Image (cartoon, rainbow, N blue to C red):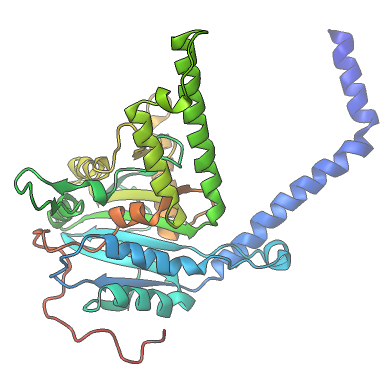
Length: 391
């Protein structure tokens, strides 16, 4: 054993001239990319647009799908290797945000300023009576050193529970056919969230951010591969059950649940998609801080849980809780880390794939069925978008 270790050490030192330059080159490359990408990112001129929709939206979030399909055109902001490896250019992305502040509800689009005309045109095309204005960033309205002796925070990033090719439950499955069996009524998934945000007290805030980056259509190859895996597994199961005398097609061995899964994967792959990251934080003064508000938000996400398909749940690595050794210090560190990430809206992770139907389910403007008193509707009907809006 000792001789083996001695030989390995000798090899490392004798042939260092061979492997050391390779390791140093790799370290330099990743360090260089880390540096120049962050320089590029910090040079982006970000703006925050607040959107106030009309109060008489009778259509489903289908129209929000059209907005996300329209702005998908920002894909391809890194067009050559010089931009990527010398300038540090990264694919542009947006942040969709639903925010409750002291009981008032806000809908925000955080975007690079050069896309303002594009985003406004897409919103106006689907919601003509909407009001859009640039506002100051709400994250500056709370103490910068949270958590502190007066303020507390609880939050997390969310992850998918299964392979990203599996869809979450969307607004298309949320209808009420019990009271009106002949005319299914759309149940707006935002209803409960709007009600809870309306009940926040002065000194309470809840931030929900959906960071979204357009992705090429070649991701659908992963969907085809997963469908193939399901079919092959069903075929193997069928052969095992039938024995050597069995002579059935693989299609006969697929259960109704597996057929439903395949249909869901195919439907998800049929629409444009984005790489996404969802994160949230509940902030409040310690004298009124209530974890019930976090539970209410998790109830919102549970609406999109498809038991046999996919679901969104907090990532344990980012959740702002800690136990056992140095629990208080570790919790404070995780709180400050998440607080910083949410203030900056950084998106260095790969993210996970959500198509425009899934995005529209999570973020759209409330329909007329939402009765929460503080929903940010326009009080008067406007005349439409400006006539000089660039197209």
